[in-house]
Image (spheres, rainbow, N blue to C red):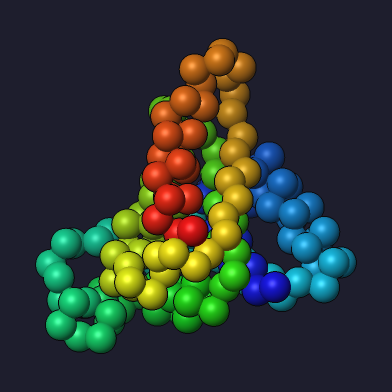
Length: 143
């Protein structure tokens, strides 16, 4: 299986990074082909909703790190999102990547498995509620 892991923490040695490392280690041990994209350390411009991609064969007007990631995303059987919880949802770094899925909506929708790995400081029941709702929507889109 081809797996693309998208991380969103700017802490290279943080909890999210550790969880991503361990997931990748286990996936590779099981024979999966894993590509890791550390969004916090890549150049990912925000989606401008300019619709350039709709008339240019899914090519985005922004030429940045998403060009390399898009190739891996399209090949992937599974997408894994690894994020710290920032104000009840995923980090901006991961969200910026997801916003840029727009250029490949038709190619990404309906054929991917997805996993969410999240870390949080808070332990209240509602702490992960917003992130859960966002993830549910992403699963409906990808699967």
